[in-house]
Amino acid sequence: MSSYTKWDRAACTGRVDGEEEAERRRKALMARQSGHRLAGERKRHGLTQAQLAQAMGVTPGRVSGIERGELATIDAVARYVEALRLRRRLGT
Image 1 (cartoon, rainbow, N blue to C red):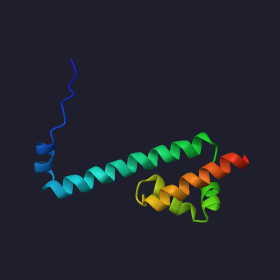
Image 2 (spheres, rainbow, N blue to C red):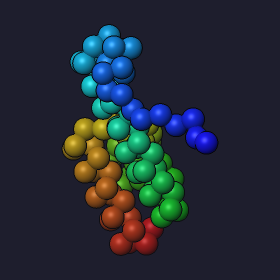
Image 3 (cartoon, rainbow, N blue to C red):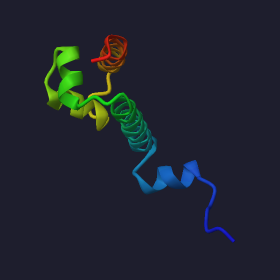
Image 4 (cartoon, rainbow, N blue to C red):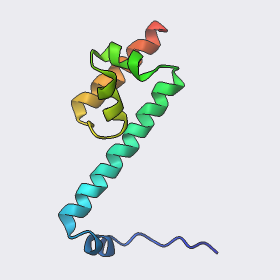
């Protein structure tokens, strides 16, 4: 038998000081998950953070932040994906 329990939004909200904090944490978790998926795609294509950063015109630290979900703005993610596509098409 599994110890898995269904997620209870009300209980979670009560544990983290309200709805706003619960929503902030949910968004942060989603950003980290998205960053992790982006990093996986970069690695699948055999690229380093430095190579992708060069294609984006940013520092490797910026790429790292995106992959950690810390800089997950729509613009940053779009530039990341576009640079990944460009690098893949060029085969570099």
